[in-house]
Image 1 (spheres, rainbow, N blue to C red):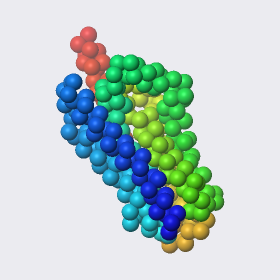
Image 2 (cartoon, one colour; image 1 turned 60 degrees about the vertical axis):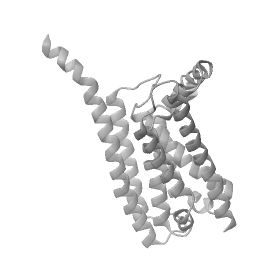
Image 3 (cartoon, rainbow, N blue to C red; image 1 turned 90 degrees about the vertical axis):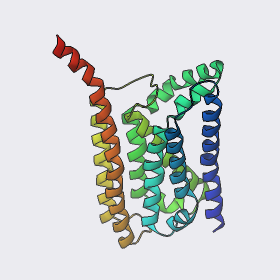
Image 4 (cartoon, helix red, strand yellow; image 1 turned 120 degrees about the horizontal axis):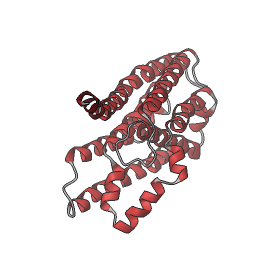
Length: 255
């Protein structure tokens, strides 16, 4: 019980701090420029709420004993919260709120080789979907409930990998190195397949220490819940692709 409470506190602090910083940046930048859109603040708030629900409170406590609850927390932390927070455009807000000096430094970091490597859709997919395969097909799932440091590491990886995966496919903010829509679409299809196959594997092959009935319930939740969130990603990617190709179509018709 002490480990659960300690883990919840340590995992909740970064999200609470990020929420406070986001609100502060929105208010301070609004005094120099136009007001930051309220709906983006709402998206960041919702993303923070879903992240907190997955790491602290009743759901997080139940997740230690119930695999279905764990999987619901996984969907909140690794898929829904990253999507909502990415839609809130935190990097754009940071560049807008920082002074010119520090905004340039942040821009240089975003253009650095490590960031470009991590933001490659293929790299992001390996970190995201590949990480889940490692978690649920090895003893890692059982071990994360025994060691505090591993519990923290796995949860932070799930969120960060989910966020990087989202922004690597959907360009909502300034992106120094952009990949084609075709490439991103292919990677997205591969990621969806990997996620779907893993959910079926969990259904038939429970992770270490998970009862079969909980594995089946968790696998179904991962499959259908993941598809529901992935539909939004597919829609956004197709929408951006359509908007990008529309001016070219108009020009070609005119000529």
